[in-house]
Length: 150
Image (cartoon, rainbow, N blue to C red; front, top):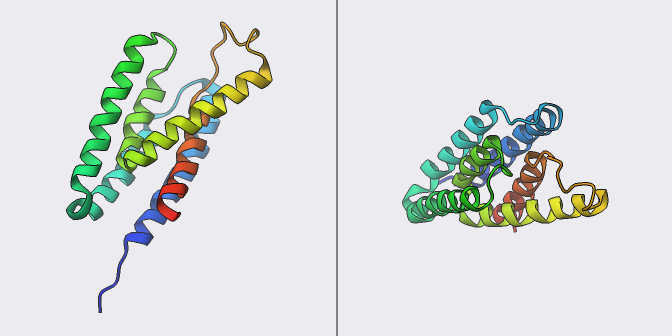
């Protein structure tokens, strides 16, 4: 009898994203940094997905990693000192979740950050730093659920 465990690994990945998001919310809001254990946990969960689906989606995960690497390099080169090192590491670690997860995550996180800045007032937020990690976590959780379960 053949048992397909792919749904189990996808649910496990979403739980890892959720619980790592709790850590990001706490550390990034309180200390303005994302701890390395969160990025390591996301990387390991994404690597597990890659190992489970490598025969079917090998080029998909490789393309996702390369795309996110180029994306982050371009963002860091054009927008200096605006995106922190923890956010960059989070983006790279979350790229192993897949290309669509990464694209939707960046789109949702950017939209949520714009809404946040709009509520707080763009004039007040002009020269202030705010934690972008929680927006990335919410975007990652929503995009993972959208891609894996819909």
